[in-house]
Length: 391
Ligand code: FES
Ligand SMILES: [Fe+2]
Image (cartoon, rainbow, N blue to C red):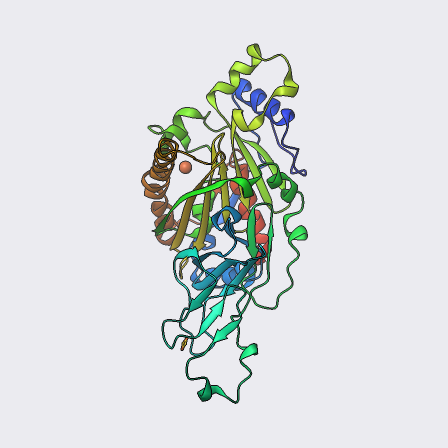
């Protein structure tokens, strides 16, 4: 079966039907042709610089799950391609994204995460509130010729929608989130991620190109070989993708083994819920993977780390049903430990080999199969954004 690259189909029973049909036929949605990708796409440091300046610093990024700052005055500091960001929720509930650099001499007023209305810079104790305003300067007389109202933290363009705080890393840029997300916005709303419970996160760095790392979450061709001994390989049907584009973004349904039981057990197709029959994995262009499951979502944020062959990975997990007991929290700890181990010990044990292949190989190109339709889409979308022509 060949998927057209048409706009996405809704998240409904039809999606389950497509997954069931592919599973029963032992096939997958496919791209029209194979695709050749020059090794430099993964190996060129200059290209990584261009990706940062033309894509990652100019595109809305989902920098934080709303669920990570659920209450007024919550805040989180995180680094995104070398920028320290202070993300706050003020007492009126509005989220803000600031560059976490003091306007005096540049130290970082905030660190970690927590609940606070004010942040005191560790160097000379300038104080900022969680709306970014400068509220206190020791030795004020030393600055008596300066209007301190114009020395607040630099705020980045941001918007909180669909369960995420989105920001553009360039101050002063206009953000058109609807244009960026298109039909993906309403699709994300279906999950109600803002009501999830942020459970835990871990960080990795790896010697692999960031775009190559993202590709590991865009095909199930590798599942039996890399994940054969873990839950991903055991629960899903290998090399079977129900594929839909949402503009630049995409969704892949990876049918669970039990989907085939639907052919006998459930006559009313209108009751078929795709989220219980498939792992639905989204690529939110440019750098975010959302891997949903019936009980939660893995949030996998992958960014370049200063060179073509290096990336950082922020892997977190949010629960669909907030834990209210220690027992439930332990259960979620176990789930997160398991899915994190699969990424750390399986995908990211494999991926640096591909990076070395791209850097040291003396062949000409990587070859993406028709079955690797999601990977092909990623490459085509990035290539278009970067002005790279593919054969
Ligand atoms: S650098 Fe922040 S108070 Fe001096
Ligand atoms: Fe994988």
